[in-house]
Image (cartoon, rainbow, N blue to C red; front, side, top):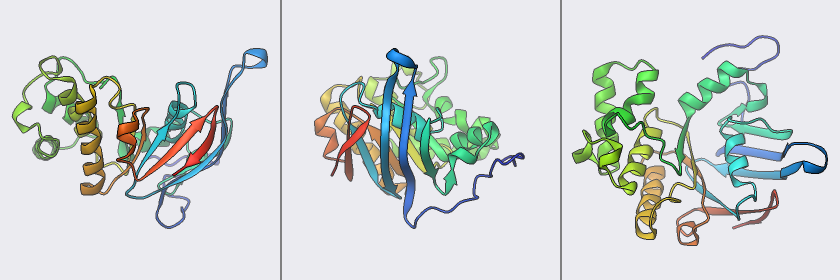
Length: 243
């Protein structure tokens, strides 16, 4: 990971409270200006302990995706502070943010985001190729992950040959490829029927336990919220409930 000059920190220059993977303090984000400004976040604060699955719930426009984008380093807040696995994101330059997203965060999206022309195994292996992991090591890791999500028998199938639930399981395996500290999932069951969605959420919970990772998941499905260790409810850019 690159060192940054000109005041930028490195990826391990700050400590977090014991047991906290994510620390968010007074987070604010506004899009646009003047009369058309949208105040997406209005002072959001919360902590996510290591090894927990924390769910964000709220109506469309409540700020869930904005929180995920900011915590994942995909967007920059207008105010407040985010500390991820000991790193204050405000102190990172572009190269270090890229390295953090690549090495320490796994992303799972509602739309799956698989590459159509690649097989399930090849999709899972993409992050490992980007890190130039040797072929033998890469193949072993891909095989382990496909087994973990119950898709060993589908390694050579392309996304178009898989069901929606199977595609999302491939996406979860891909998110785990680089042994991330944090999984960020935005409506991961949004395109799935209720039963399949519950199966995928069960898998996410099992992965958090077996792989010792932390997960921050946005979902509107009340059935799935029961599987989370904690639920944060967002309304109009503020957290109104933490249970």
